[in-house]
Length: 637
Image (cartoon, rainbow, N blue to C red; front, side, top):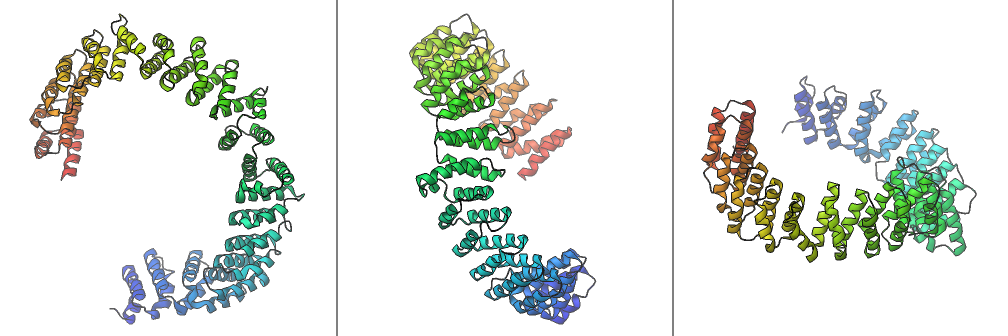
C-alpha cells in the first residue's frame, strides 16, 4: 500500500498517467493530506486527471474537503465552478455549518450556489436557514432558489415560509408554487387554493396546474367553490384541474343547477386560447353526452385545421363516437357546409352501431363517388345483416370498382350469403382485374355447392381465365374430388393454368406417391415458372428423401432460376445427397450461380461443405465471390 507521502509526491508528477493513478490511490488510501492537491487538480487541462481528482474528492468527503472546495465557488471558469458545486451537492451534508456561512456572503451568486447545494441535503437543519433567506434576502434570484431548495428537501415545516413567499415578487411566487407542489401535502394544497385569485392570471394558472398535478381529490370542493368567478381565464384553468382530478366523477359532486352551469363553463372553455384547457373542456363535455354538448364539440371541430390539428380531431371523433347519432350530427350531415358534412360522414363511418349504418345507407346514393367509397368500406368492415340488402343493391346499380369490391367482400367473405352466389359469379367477368380477383376470393369464401358446381363447369371452359379461376379455387377448397380436374389442367396449353394446377394439386392430394407421380413430369415443362412451381410443390412433402434425386436433377436445368431454386431446396434439406453435385457449378463461369452454391454450402454446414469452400477459395479469381467465401469461412472458424 502506498503511503500518503508517496501519493502526494506522485500528484506533483508531470506525467498525467502517474498523476491519475495517484488521484485514485488518494481516495482508496483515505489520504486527506492530498485534498488540497486534488482540489487544485480539478483545474488540470487533462480530462482524465480532472475526473480522477473529482472521484477521489467525493470518496474522501468530510469538512476538510468541503472547506477546500468552497474557494472554487469564486472561480471565473464556469466548468471548474460547476464541478465544485456538483461535488458539494454530493458531500455537503458532512459540513453543513460551512455551507450555512455562505448564505451571508455579499456576492449574491455565492448565496445562490450555497442555497442550491443546501437543497440537496435532506436535513431538517437547513430548513430554517433557507426559510430565513426566502423571507429576507435582498436578491429575488436568491429567494427564488431558496424556495426551489425547500421543495427539494421535502420537509413540511417549510410550508409556512413558502406561503409567505406567495406575496413576494412574481418570479419568487412561481418558485414557491413549484415547491409547494413538490411537497405534495394537504397543507401545501390548501395554501395554494387560498391564494387563487390573489395574483396575476399567470400565477393563478400556475397554482391550478400545480393542484392538478398534485392529484389531491380533497381539493375538489374548494376548487368548485372557486368556479363562480368573473375571471374567465381563471375559471377555465379551474375547469381543467377539475377534469384532470376527477373526470366524469366531477358531475357526481354537482347539483342539477351546478351541472348546468358547469356545462356552460365547459362550452365557454372551448374558446380558451390554451389548447390544454380546450382538451380538458372536451373531456368534460364527453361525460355529459347530451346534444348541447355534441353541438358545442362539433362547432369546435369545424374551426380546426385538418392537417395541423389532425391528432386533436381524431380525439374529438373518439369522444363524439360515444354520443352516438345525435340531432346535431344529423344537422351537420345535411348542412350546406361541405367541411361539416364531411366530418359528420367520417364520424359515422367510424361508429359501429346499427343507427350509424342506417344513416350511411340512407345518404349513400346522394354523395359523390369518393365519399361513397369511404362509406362502402366502413359498412363492409362494420356491417352485419342490416346492410346485406344495401350491398346487393350496390352490385346491381354501381359501376365503381372500389365500391363493388367492398360489396363483394362483404357478401362473400364476411356474410357468406349463399343467395348472393349468382351475383358474385357474374363479377368474375368484370372488366377490371382487381374486381375479378376480389370476386374470385368472395366466391371461394362462400364455398357453397352452387359455387363449386359452377367452378367445375368453368374448368372445362374454352375461356382460359375461367379455367384458371376454377383450378385456383379447387386448390383453396382442398377437396380430393377436384383432383381429376386439376390433373387435366396439369397438361393445359396455358402455362399459367399449369402452374396454378401444380400449386392446387398438392393442396388437394394427401398421398405423397401420387403427388410425385403427377408433379414430377412438370419438372420438364417448357415453362420455367411451372418447373419452379413443381420444385416448390415437391419440397412441401414430408418425406424429403423421395424428392432429392428430382431436385438434384434440376441442377442441370437450362434456366438459371430453376437451378438456383433447386440449390435453395438442397440447402434447406442439408443431407441425403452428395454435395459434389454442386462442384461443377462452382467451376463454371456464372458468378450468380457460384454465389448461390456458396450460400447453399453455408447452409449445409458439414465438414465436406467447408472443405469444398476452402478449395474453391484457392481457385476463385472474382473478388466479390472471394469476399463472400472468406466471410463465411471466418464465421465458421
